[in-house]
View (tube, rainbow, N blue to C red):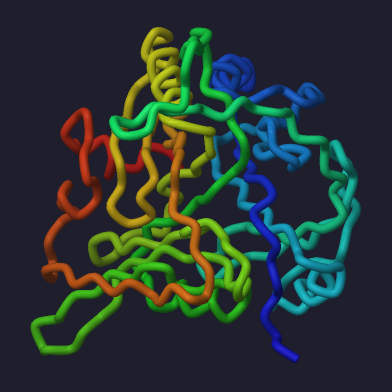
Length: 328
């Protein structure tokens, strides 16, 4: 029997904030629905089946509180207690109940494996019908939208910038059913080829999954491991543009977007929340199964990230605001 913990999908992510009032405003503007407000802990939901996809907690310091992975079975939850240093199974007190195991990952960062959180009925979303030059299917019907926040479906992915890609990559692939979708490598001055970044998807064999639910990217030598961003799926390009315009109208700070990534293919839109954490809306990402081999991409050693490697197109040039870390 494999020692790896089988994960069904990401469940939710946790942040610690000093000012929850600011987050109450921003998260609504970003497109979350407030599911439950306990005063010092708020549960934020999308329209998808997950009970919630983000938790904000009152704290005396700003910090990333870890991602929660949904175990494929309770046996996998039990297996999570065998992660070195992991806690025992404990009850969750938030909406939907359930259980969790807390652990510290390779980098000493918090994480959780959860199971048994009761799902909710997804809210129905109208799908766009598009007219192409050779195929006109939307007839006597109009595209009309309400101004407002983008409607979030789910937590899609998150990841770190780190100074120890090799160690972190091995730990996450050995611990969970994760595999590379795309990996970046470069040739060192001594001729050795070294991996320095990757996008990880869940290994669920023939079942199709998101291109990535987790990523690791190398920073300059000595880089402290820090969260780069968390990302939330919206239904389509119009939702992204509506959300972009809404956040712009509220004078929030753009990190980068709109654009379409090369690896993963998703349309991206990155913003800073009031505390400096980077959050993303994405749509139209790749959907892969085990018939798709890992993509291997060679980059120049020591070269900083280049816009042409990251985006097929973008409405604005990439600036240091996409690379810099303001909150971790």
